[in-house]
Every structure is written in C-alpha cells, then in structure tokens.
Length: 414
Image 1 (tube, one colour):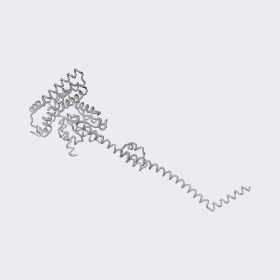
Image 2: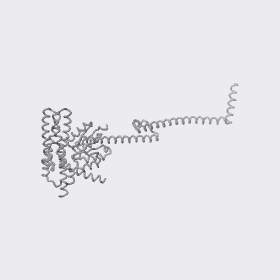
Image 3: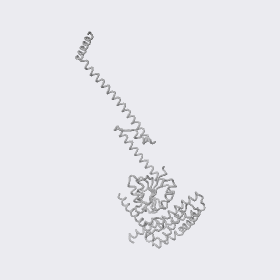
Image 4: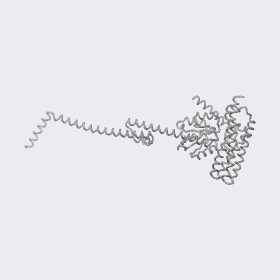
C-alpha cells in the first residue's frame, strides 16, 4: 500500500471518528441539561427516559472511542480495514444504543408536545442527532465522499475540513520546530450551531457572560472590538481553522494573554500537541465533561486575572519611575501618582511615600528660594549702604557739607 493511500485512509478514519462524535456531543449535552431541568421543575415522569438517552449516548461514545481509537488510527493499525467490515463493526457495536436514543427521544417528544414543555426544541435536536449518527454508521462511505446530509449543520465538506486542519497542523509544526476571578466574558467559536448552543448554555449556567462566533474570521473581528477573558475554540472550521485562529491570537501582543481552550471532536494526540505548542491553555475533547470544563475555565480565568494584575503592576511601576525622572527635571506633579497611591499594596505605599517626599522636597525648594531672595535683597541693601559710605567719607564730600552749612547760615542771617 502506498504512503499516499495510507494517509488517505487515516484521514478518512479520523474524519469518521469526528463525524460520529459530533452528534454524540449534542445527545449527551442536551440530555444532561434536560435532566437538570426535569429535576429542578419536578418533571419526574421524564427523568427515566432522559437518563436512558444520556446513558446510551455515553455508551456510544465509549464504542466510538474503542472501534475508532485515535492512537490506533495514528499508528496505522486500521490501515488495512475494509469499509464493509468497518460498517459491520459499527452497526454491531452501536445500533442498539442509537435505536434506544431515537426511540426514547421520540417518546419524550410526544410527552413534551402534549404538555407544551419548553424542552421541545432540545428533544428535537437529540432525535435529529440520533438519526444523524445512525446514517453515519449505516453508510460510512458517505463520509468519504463528504456527504453529511443530516440537517444538523451546514453542507460544508467536512472531509476537506479535516484534511485541511491536519495539513495546517503539519505546516504549523514545521514552523514551530524551526522557529471576578471565577466569572468572565467568554467567546465561543464553533461552526456548528448545536455545539455553540450547548457550550454557551453550560457557561451561562456557571455565571459567565458569553458571545459566540460562527467561524474563525468572525472570532478575530470580535476580539478586536471586545475585551474577552477567555476563548473556547473549535479546531475543524471552514475557511480558517482553529489552528490558524490560535496562531493569529498568540502572534498579536494585544491578544496573546487571552487564554484559549480548544474544544474539538478531533482528539488525535498530534492535534493536542500542536495546539499546546501554539499557546493554547488546554484541549478538551467533545463531548466535554461539564465539571472538567468548569475547572479548566476557572484555571484559565485565574491565570488571566493574575496576568492582568501583573500588567497593571508593571504599568504603575512605570508611572513611579517616570515620576522620579520628573522630580529630577523639576516637572513633577504629585497628582500624577494618585492612581498608584490609591493601591493598598506595597507599591501603593511606596507611591504615597514618594508623594510625601516629593512634596517635602518641593516645599524645601520653595523655602530655599525665599531665603535666597531675602538674602539677595539684604545684599543689595548692604551694597548700597557701602557705596553711600564710600562717598560720604571722602574729603570732597566733607568740603561739600561745610559749604552747605555755610550757605544755610548765610540764609538764616538774612
């Protein structure tokens, strides 16, 4: 078998794994949210079927990970598998569970319609995801042709997307080898509407503000105009994939400190390594664990908070050193350090001491100037007195005085 054919088979298997995990993300994610809703609102009759759907989704995820193990794909262990054999294995391992999901979601839909429950839309998405999954295991050849006619996402060529993402990872690898604390405003970037919806709702339940972008270019435009605390970024997207978006973010001095967590159904180790090397804080596979997601976001936000504090601290230090230069130049304004002096830490204390000392120096300079001015006046007066004394002590001046006295006497006699 040629290397090109092996590469094509591995790309197909990796893409098939991604295509199967994508609807599972919807099934597991929506069933978890509906279970919480049913428990909170006392809809006890819905809970058994929702639990069945959630369990079946978890079983399917385990089966996909087993049959299409990413490590085995990368190692070439599945290069020789026949498509017909793969189809038989998939249907044998997964048909019962996916049928259970479709059946239970249909039953739940009937109950939701009869009672006019708000969960109707989510149940429809679960059933559609189950049907999408069934179509994939029934005819995997459609994935090879890039046909994903499920109604769940756009008609983009996902096979081409996977190959493009992998090609980008390889090109970036070459470039690399040669070259409130728990709440935040988060950006979710994913081309799949259901993925955006599930992730956004989880984040909003955790108390975060959430914005969404449908593709990488839109995400970069939004980052330019909004101050995000963290970005959750999908890998496989059309036009600009997650690798390229991540590279752009980390190459810009304004954005590089925004933590980025990659969330993708593409869970091959090469993809994980590339993202970490490009600067991602973490990498979570779809379907994601809500508890793990919360912990990773909390860690990312804490790192962002500490970095923001560090940047602010360094900015204040720069203000302080600039004030020192202003004192030396005689242009210091004590009010220029007001923000730094308002800090409650050691830097704020240093700024307050600096302000006090600078004011003392200024007052001392003013006193010295006044003393110098007074001394100058006294010197001028002494100089004038000395000049007068020098004149009055001359013989000529005494003769003039005698003549003046004689004149006064003459006038008095008259």
